[in-house]
Image (cartoon, rainbow, N blue to C red; front, side):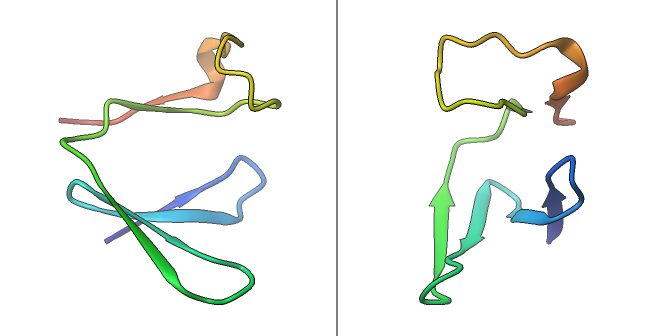
Length: 63
């Protein structure tokens, strides 16, 4: 299992294979998001999907 951290160094989620695991800050439950593989992760300042992230704020995942 690999911890994925924000640019501020806080853990955002954990990645285990094709599963993203997030812990709710309020109720402490774990949310498992099953994928068919992650391609990249982008850091954005707004939730707007149309916003284009600069190359320095994009993380390409191996594999």
